[in-house]
Image (cartoon, rainbow, N blue to C red; front, side, top):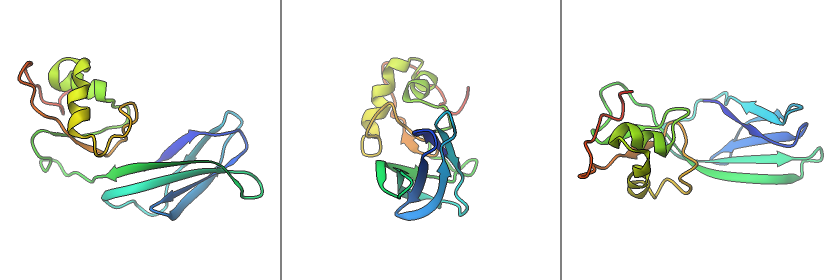
Length: 143
């Protein structure tokens, strides 16, 4: 698992998973930072807290995001579900599943308890992909 983002260049970024520190990084000249937790994050529901701090340790910015981590073995995923891969979006999943990206709202509505913003989904999340009677449903795992 790798966490990355943007912050003020030169600032320190600290990351916690369920209030347990997992790493810290300094943003480079472009503001990019990256952290790979040393301990693996186990399957289940988590909260990731990212804090940007100044040299004195004062928190300048904070973000808390719900996160679902899943370890899926081939052949164990329930029909009608999909695991979010890096680079996926609800639009791409809907296009692969229903043939139209506009139908992302079906997936969003079926998973509203774990999606607070349809523009922000995360690798490892497992979503229910409901059938759509108006279109031929395709296999979401095939390209």
